[in-house]
Image (cartoon, rainbow, N blue to C red; front, side, top):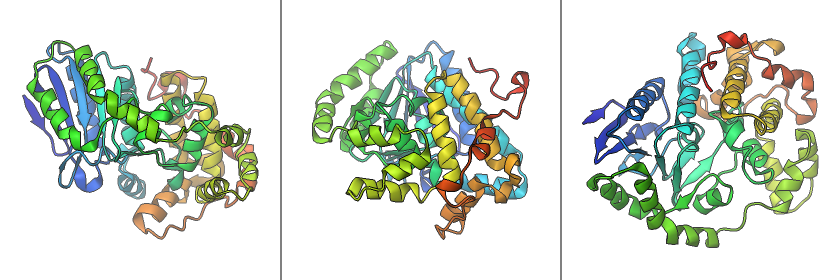
Length: 372
């Protein structure tokens, strides 16, 4: 039986639960309605003995595949703040609950990550039993571009990348392509994008006995292409990344990038486009997340995102916040000239950063207290 809501298509075929994100004009950016539908469908299938595994894909303007998910709907974030829409709070609580559900799903959950996989798209895919990328995959956690931080469990899964790759990806928002995602531990296998329609059709046509068989079959189909992708992609755990992004503070990282080689120049330029304040918050998030369970990390991130829009310890709320200013500059006015406060990394103090990590809720009243 198929269910077609406006932006999420779900159906059960051959003991598989198949999900297509279908908001192509927005690159499948997640709305609150989409988050709720995904939560509903996945909860329902988790308790359905007829569903042996779940496979999720995106869509583009020309048809299936080509874009997985570009993240949360940041225009909605901006409009919600301006209008005082309280559903913004619900969005983050329910999205992070969805991320936790996926990471702890009791059946194989498989993500086919063709095209753009950013922000919220990473939250829909990093908990998968099998994370499939293609040569067209563009994967990133670019939240520092908009004065936010890599949420949806980013503190958990980025901090578990090799060495200090997580700090590098979190602070710079660097975009990884297919083989690079394999080297960083953020994908499991790589297949040619052109083969995805046939793989999807085969998944639909076969009557699967159990979920493990689905995973095994996909691993077999992708073995050669994965080996080729790894061989064709330079090793990503490099000495410069570990040496620089293992330093204690953003200021030290920035200072270490004063060298004139191409990588240092490009990396320093990337940092200087981001919010200095949120770079420092993000570094602290990754370092703390490395020693947390997923549930603990998501609760921390729920605290952080509240402070991003209501930064009371700096007397900044709504349109005065770093996050709303960043969204304005990138996606609303599109002037790409955010007015960050403070404007320089050197001017960020611990007194500005540490209150982000103080929960605005008592433990018993935390919106994600139910996560285990």
